Length: 453
Ligand SMILES: [Fe+2]
Image 1 (cartoon, rainbow, N blue to C red):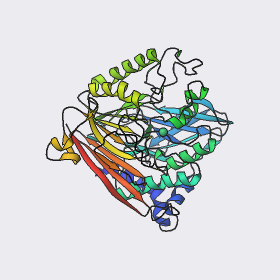
Image 2: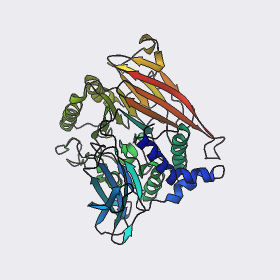
Image 3: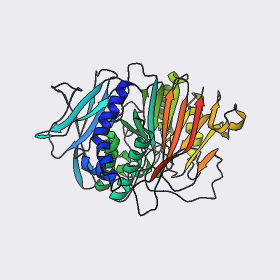
């Protein structure tokens, strides 16, 4: 383990695991979570270059200018960065969100930071920039943490903490494949989600592909997903559309997808987040042309790199295949050699390799078979089970083939590690003794596989 990573782990543990270990056996992880509170609802978000920058999103209680102060770990004086205002109505509440990009940071360096505005200032937290020439990147995949009450979100947070704790590893980032709340107009649910997300997002950047539960219908102004844009600040490098006119009364604006479809690099991999709600029927053909051109332009320079795409609705899954994703996006992903596609929406864990709409027989690809394979063509599709509490039953009318499936109603959290020579996925199942008890009893590996060039 690299020294700097170890230092981060120690710092991370001081904030979170200190509570965790102290309370183990009683209510050990919910204390860790809810005692942190995160009243500013700070979320660290990915940037286009995590070696030299970090995005910070938070909210203030009143409409005053915000700031982020940061310093090298161990130093005394802070530098201050001003923030951009974005006041958003969440339910019936005006929320004074602020966002900021910390730029020109030193690679491979631990920073301390705090946020504030007026006479308010947060506690001090810390993050680490990626190494100058990172040979690897590791991340958690969290699907569909949506819930309806506080215990649902506590459970989600407990699951994440328990997997981090038991695996003994520290992720560089976390990718969430959408549906983070059940009701996008519920300020309470958003707050619970951000509270639960605080177990990672105060110190590790996250990236989210927006889900249907954060999105309204095309004729609803909510389609612009203003709450999502309020709570998060992802790279604004996605497609910019023309007027939407296929659907009468379509409320989408030319820039509605900025921060929802985006890309970034981390370690030896290129990542692209896709707003799959944009692709849901009915499709605006002209704007799909803009999207596909954007995707091709984004992917083309990375055909020799590891490429990870993530979106809420996936093309090959046990419950909810998305035909538009399958017909319109998969050919583009295949054309540029996308290696791994992460999706949610299904609430059932599965994986398969597909090429030209046919499942690849992994047993024919070298001696490793299902769990260790190498090929020139084909894309691995990993569909997340919920990382929280919501699971679906079997459905018999979907005949999609998958190579591996996990049908139990237990949370699953895949851990992905990408180096120059492989993508390694280890999927952890979080088990509890019964459904009355929401504190996890144990963590075990239900699936592991390696993709090689
Ligand atoms: Fe969904």
